[in-house]
Image (cartoon, rainbow, N blue to C red; front, side, top):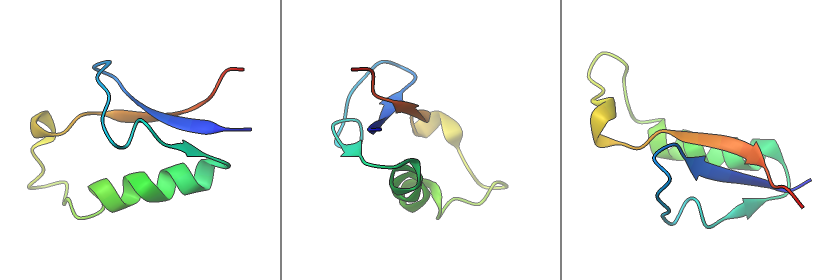
Length: 57
């Protein structure tokens, strides 16, 4: 299976152009992007919302 990360707003960026051989690799990348955010001080409106999906053949 191949996994991709998509943005809910439909835009593309350097994250959405990548493909991953497994879900965990995609998750690890998102963890790097969002891992430094603390829930109490997070301004989620400044960052896009991503989702990991399986690529359709």
